[in-house]
Amino acid sequence: MSKSREDYMKVIFEFGGQAERVGNKAISEALNISAASVTEMISKLQDEGWVTYIPYQGVQLTEEGTKMGASLVRRHRIWEMFLYEKLGYNWDQVHEEAEQLEHAGSELFVDSLDAFLGNPTYCPHGGAIPNKDGEAAPEATTPLADLAVGDKFKIKRVTDDRDLLTYLDKLEIKLDKKYTVEEIENFDNSYTIARKGETVVLNPKATVNVFVEKD
Ligand SMILES: [Zn+2]
Image (cartoon, helix red, strand yellow):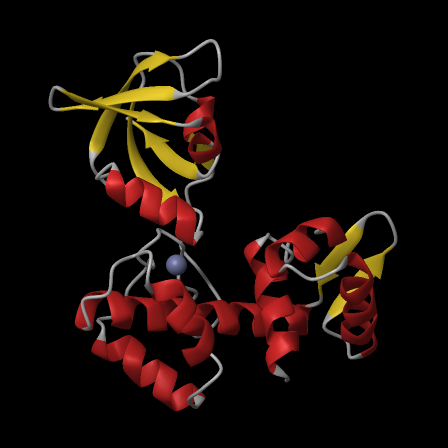
């Protein structure tokens, strides 16, 4: 499979394309590719049996496509863990490097790397790493923006977007720490969250891309 096809398959899988239809617009935005090119590639992927496409409803992975998507996401996230855990990369640095590395190495190599890392369940951003059979642990899906004042929570996953990750880093936001929603600003829906007496304000663009588990 070509590198550009792999990028499509991975994005469709990440948007839940094994279970529901993913719109062309979401794919075009995620890959930063024109809508016309997305339509063209999707019809190729459909001809090859990876996806089914219904105009105005979007694209869904076939069984073969789901296996392929899971294996691509698996590769990407295992590389991320390697960079993060073994090479000391920051979580905002791993994505771009993993984008290149995921296209390299045999299945055996990726499985060996997985074992070397101790078969991690989640990537540094809280995304689930599918196992060899394509099964993955559940991922947090509740955005911080859904919580109310007084709610206690842990951040379990963040969208893998470099600017967002850098922003969260500046605020010293980390996965798996306990926070409380202290205030929600009426004007722009920004969230003030507190941890051990210290507060941080998260802007509304971040609160829809930070996923939590309520306490
Ligand atoms: Zn990740």
